[in-house]
Length: 136
Ligand SMILES: [Zn+2]
Image (cartoon, rainbow, N blue to C red; front, side, top):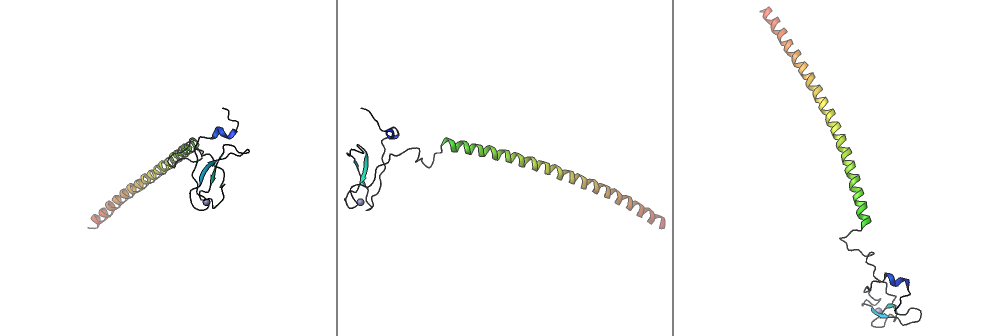
């Protein structure tokens, strides 16, 4: 037995049910014509839409993936995106750390100024008290 048709290679023996124009499930018959021998086709069961309702297309499994699965290509794309996101996050963390350091420096500066102000304040009090003592 030999299979001459190229499309036979992709044929995995699965057919899809389709609805006829009249709304009912179309039937499936095998063509016996010279041009398309052994080719399955749809027909109207009630024969109200004509006997031929189109050729059956083989169900390609890869073209109808189940919703839960992802193909390898998509997987790689997702992985690349995740790596990109991690790189971005690292960059953001770096920026935040730099900002934190700057903020810390500012706080140190403010503390230094506060310390100086306190010293000046204490000196001022001593002077005032000293002056007051002299006056009394
Ligand atoms: Zn019909």
